[in-house]
Amino acid sequence: MFEIRVICEPTDTDHVSRTLAVAFDTGPARQYPTRDGKRVRLYFTADHQPHTPESE
Image (cartoon, rainbow, N blue to C red; front, side, top):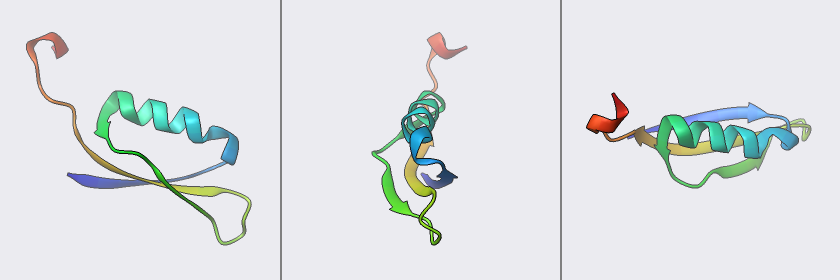
C-alpha cells in the first residue's frame, strides 16, 4: 500500500480521482487547499489492482 499526492485545479479533482481509480485500487480522496488557496491537494491511499487472468 502507498499514498499518492496530486496537486491540481479544483475543476480537475473528479477526473483525477476517476483516472487513478482505474489504474489503482484507491480509497476515497482526502482534499486540502494548497497554501496559495488556488489549487487543491488530493491524497489517495492506493494499492496495485489485483492481478487476474482477465487483466492480461
